[in-house]
Length: 324
Image (cartoon, rainbow, N blue to C red; front, side, top):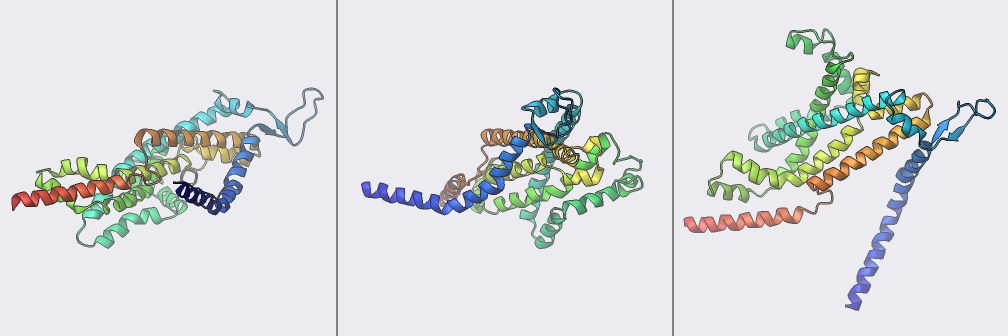
């Protein structure tokens, strides 16, 4: 027993030693910028007046939580913040929700396609492979006043102007581009399901709908939840698509765009505050998502999937023995 503990302790130290270069690299490229941004969010970049002397001060001055208070107020900087916050939430909830439904449908089509399977998969994945900026420029032409979108619906809508239509344009373009991402990962999960599970379901008399809800969806759930989690985090950081498609319209402004806009005005303290709020928002959503839906980020559910496969094979063997 003592020898076993010594070996385990030695392996643990070796594991930490091998991970040390990666941890140092992460500390440099992730930890240091994060700490620097947190400190920058507590400062104000020059231009403020010293109340004692009336002289405009240069450099950064410590203002504490004032930048955060300004962000959450109902006027001034806060007005833009809450608009960007609700836009980010809207694009994330509606966009990822629709993408999940379409992605699962695409995965089922690609998994069941018998003819021209390669062509079907390639055609579905083309939108995801197109760079976001190129995709945004393409949809900008589609949503032009004289574009294809208005000709198809037979009514002229100014898609790239302030209003609900601008939000709809961002959602349509984002769903078209990223739904294949969820479809691709879901397809990978579908291909790991043992066919014996479906054969056992047929023996038990399950129809297609019951097979989907009670077999396919539970078995593909670990992969699907992780795919949705990654897409959720990506949607909350959305910047390039609405920026290229709509420019600086308030109807399409996100938190990432708000932070970039503040930085372009050299208001680095406020930009850092927006960035830290977005970082905290993403961490909160990720934590709630993992806790509520049990996202298997480290692959802990693989053993459960294998056990279900073995159970299905035993069920199939029993059923075949009964029929014989």
